[in-house]
Structure formats: C-alpha cells, structure tokens
Length: 320
Image (cartoon, rainbow, N blue to C red):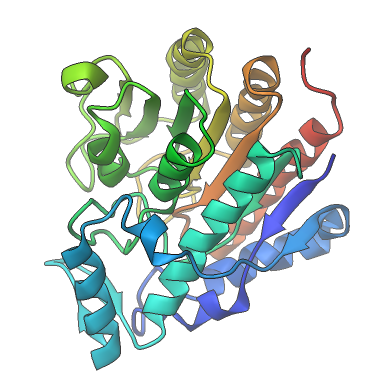
C-alpha cells in the first residue's frame, strides 16, 4: 500500500496579494522539500479535479458559493473584515483544493492507498457554512468528512486539527453531529477567538468536540502532553473508521503567525501516534490536508517529517 500525494499546480494561481503570508510559495516549499528528501519517489502523485459543486454545497450555503465565485470573477477582492483576499483564479484553486480532499478521502476509504497527504491552497478550516474567513474559502476537510458519511456510508469519522489557529469553521459545521468527532489543539487566546475547552458540541453532538487550548509559549512538551493525554484517548473511545487531519504547521517555533514553539519532532510524533491509532481502529486509513504554515523552511521540514511517518505507516499492515 502506498501513500498518495495530492497536488495541482493551478492552486499556485490563487494570489492574495503582495506580502500576504498565504502565498503560492508555501505549496512549492512543501513539494520541494519532499522532492529533495527522496520521498516523492515513494509516493503516488495525483492531480485532483475540481470538487463538484454538489459536494461543496453539501457543506456550504448556496449564497456562500455564489459570493466567492462572483468576487473572484471581479478580480482582486476582500471577502471578510480581515485579510481573506481572492483573485480571478481563486475560485478554481479553491475547488481544486476541495477536490483534492475529496479524492484523497474516497481513495483511502476504498483501499486504493494506505493514506494520503493533500498539498493544496487556499486552506479551509476557518471557512464556515456561510462565510469565508482566515484565508479560507471552502472547508476541504469538512467537505471530505461529509462525503465519507453521506456518500460512502462511514459511521464514525474523526477530524484532528493541529493548526495553531482553532478551526472554527469545521467545529461549527459539525458541532451538532455525533458521527464526526472534532479534536483541536491550538494556541489560545489567538485568532479566531474560538476554541475554549468549554466548547464541547451542541445538542446530539455534545461531547463530540474536544478543544485543547494551549497558551502562547507552549512547546513540544505541552502539546504532546495534551495530544497523548487527551486527544488520543478520546479518539480511542470514539473508534473512528477514518481519520482526517487539518494539518497546519504554523505552531512551529519559526512561524511568524504564532507564539507557539513546536519543533519538527512534535509533528513527527503526533503523526506516528495518530497513524498507529488509525491502524488500530480504521484499517490505517488517514488523510492529511495542509492548512497553515508560513515560514517556508519550517513548513518544508515539518511536511517532510509528517510524510515520512505516513509513508512508514503505509508499509505496516493494519490491525486485523
């Protein structure tokens, strides 16, 4: 079984403007790091197709999709009160990013690949049902999770989000759904202001959200303690049939958008542990989707460590 690597060069055409941290060089740095490591030759390279609109609309409101499309058609535009900019190419790039998440999730669920890493942009986990936010247009991890549940019939899907910023969009989309477990480690307080430990889901989904907020200045010790002491036991009890990762690397100590101090080793250890949990409960099925990470050298190094662990996990048969 191999690890799939999803990437489409047209995602580089999404451009948020000069000096914007979410820049085309991010994906290029990841791909270059994998090429230089020799890993890329062990991976199955895949170019995604744009996500069908019906799959995007299974998560996002029609007016949200129309707003993003019309803004992109006008050229450069600001979609929120902060810094979520688009250009003419952004709509296609966002559909390709969502399509990559969909195809990776379906292929891994059907046993074509052991696991997968999606290198796409713009990122997605801040995008809510009806609004873009935090550089994010369409929520790829949420679109993939909804597809796994509604179209492929999986009963329990887990989303682990270790981006330094809380994935407000993903949490809000699934907070009332007990079949999708959302677990997040993130710096707190920090953008976007959500993710307190008291946020545990609503209605039937109460208890299917786990937030592990960590203060600025936290490093490997604090994050691994939360991951191993809270996230892994919760997932073990949930017994997911497939694990999705909102894989941000912006908690690295070199990243300009956080005050968290992780090293590459923390991402390596979290990946190894999560892959082991996926082997125990989900036939090894794990799909990782790039979110944040804004220092190019740190991004490349963390992605390399992450994909080395995915590739190693793919060589090990899942638990029977």
